Amino acid sequence: MDPRIEKVLKLPNKQKVALLAVVLLLEGAAFFFGLYQPKLNQLKELQLKVDDLHTQVRENKKIADNLPKYKSDYAQLQKELESALTELPNQKEIPTLLTSITSAGKSAGLDFLSFKPKAEESKDFYSAVPVDISVAGTFYSVANFFVAVGNLPRIVNMNNVAFSDIKSEKSQTLVKVSCLATTFRFLDKKETANEKKGK
Picture 1 (spheres, rainbow, N blue to C red):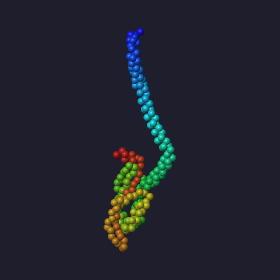
Picture 2: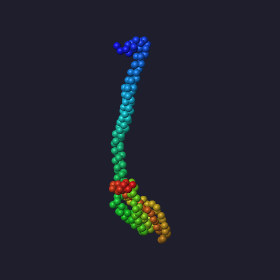
Picture 3: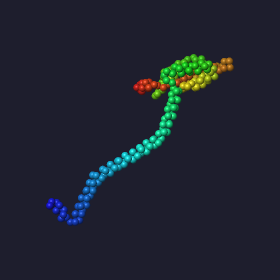
């Protein structure tokens, strides 16, 4: 028999029990740190993943439950976008729109002293088209002109309005008015791409 085993067998019972306890503790520690703890950590990680997946499932279920509402909202937004698009002309429609502005002024009884289109100012998906306008006529003709421009199917902003040479003639008030009329147009895809490249 192995002399070490014989040496252990000759030990008193208290020392044998203590030695057995140490061996069992070492085996228990090896089992805990070598097998159990890694599996426990892995279990915790998997539990966290399961919890995350449950959260995602709940969120996706909420979205799925609201899908008809989202589709309805999307359809409504599409209609609103189409409506907005009709108020912004494209490049080909700008000359017609400027002619409409001139016609509105002449129909109101105004004399056009100047009509000077300025350089366009490109934004993200649209471009501002400013025009310096100077007109002369009665105060009511000017008011009617602004109302007519406001009633055009396209968006036209009238800014920097300045009155000058105000005088009364035959019970009418005659004025000269200079202003900046700004309309807007959508940039087509090619123009938008060029604008992004330029930036």
